[in-house]
Figure 1 (spheres, rainbow, N blue to C red):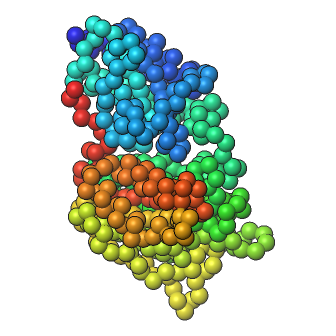
Figure 2: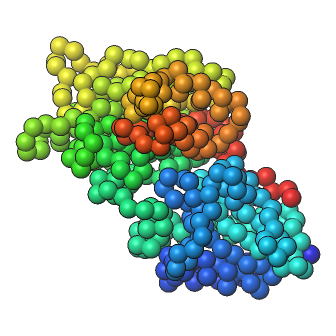
Figure 3: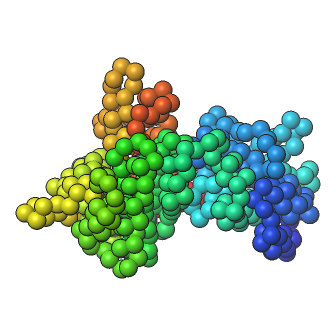
Length: 407
């Protein structure tokens, strides 16, 4: 049978009120207590940074669920509500949990015998999981327990610093979906991504600091900070933003370290893309599910090495078409080598991305599977940091990230 709408209003209102004082590791217990009057149970599971396991949020360690090969994992991968049954034959629903459009984990909603699965119930559970996603992320900065669960193991100091600096992996509007990944998640040092999305424009960037240690992470952090500072002062010219990074990196004591980068701006009304290459691999442009070109405008030197006046930086311009997909990446992707010394290579990267387009996967899942493929190519151990950022300029790409609510 259905549940009166007023009851759901009271539950959500109560959960919001309770969330002000709850600690991160109490989220499952708080959600469970909130939905009990509806004949439901609830457990919140957070995904680890590597997106390999779903981990129940509890004060004490509990069993983890693999993202690959499980019903809960399929919910996470495809963003679809899945039905399940426990060992006692009791029904439950696995519901994707997002913060905005960033995949945070899943919520397990148990149904008492008198509660039937229905479209109305799924709508309410979807709203509940959205609220829990926002609450979970809001508690992350204040909860060592949540951060430990999310890390699912120790991070190096360099990785800890960079993960604190990066924006969420995914952000979407009705015009644009941006999603990114960095590996190895626990040892990343010099690689990073950044983005900013406004009503009519977006900024996209990938960085690769020289080296594989804390110094590389600090250099990359300085480059990101310089560019962000310029943007937040209202600067939009990519040449000027790169010069800001040059100045800050050169002002540091000791030998100047440098960072390769691609900086780009996209007018989300017209599709005009402007980009600057600073010693970095050129982005790929996919159209109609095929890779149509590299965006290979003449590069300037890496950030930290100012271009000579006789060769001013070149700004590349590209007119995107609706449905186009842009892929920015670092050389750790294409230069990943297996035991036989074979590179993962640009051709393999293109082939995988095209096949993912044919499968109509959500952009975050495309990157997760691509990263898994690269790790498998190197038997789980990357020799270099690897970063991917994908941007879909599309009016329907965001729709793939939300569940169909019919049972």
